[in-house]
Image (cartoon, rainbow, N blue to C red; front, side, top):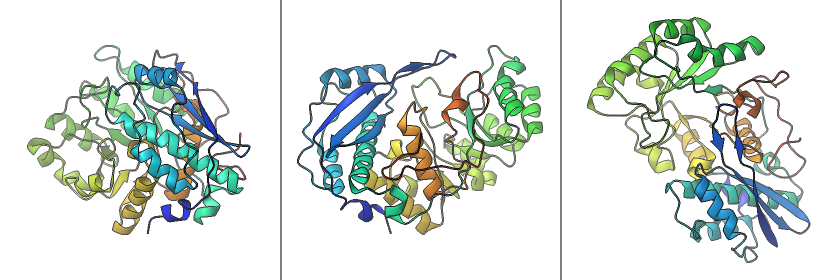
Length: 357
């Protein structure tokens, strides 16, 4: 059964809220907009992070300010119901429609945090599920600067392995990877997952799918998960012998999306921000447990509390799987020393939906 009924009755008072810019440009040149949602009530605060990817969506949101009245709901469940009926992009339509789910997650995660703090309880205590040591993988997008530039592909992996030898990786393979690149990656023994990016269209990370590319990757990395392939007649024929390793992330927004996959997966990415609402998220967890489908978590390059919250959920719901929720320091171009390694021991706050500083 879903765990959401344990959360919905939590009393909740929201007196006001505010939006704070968290935007950051990484050394790689990647620009990550983010907005911190702070809900206030009864002397407590609840925090959530809006991880929508488009600058214009964040600017419109912040410029509009705290335009919604959240004083009506008396419980977390009522707040989630209210949020589900609001247009959180009333100031301007989103650049991408799926961003509505990301923003809903920001507000509902903040409300969950606030309700728990007002109750003086931590999430895992209310749900009766302990936090266990969290296995994580490091997601690295390693693209060659020019064809055949093996070191440019391999440097992000080798630099992390030099400091943290046990690190496991989720990589975004490219059709122009040379045999040398593939051989050296295979010899590292550190590749857990290959994100084929076949389920994206019109984004900077799109990868053209071909049966030859998929066959090459599946054969070269016989033990790696194969995430988000494009499914058509030709690729299905190639992937059929590897179907137990095929998993999905980008298409998963609900239980119905899991049910409608080409094959019943052994494991699937249950990403909180991609699903959006707390009720739908816990319904997805319950469905996977009932159907014997494994789950793992994934991030969105969160800059603040959002990363803590997805680590918290992963440690509680699926701690032993290849969770793409590495500590934020692993996202740096020059990875700092002293980062925690996998499995990660999490220290939750005494109340709320978050971790100790």
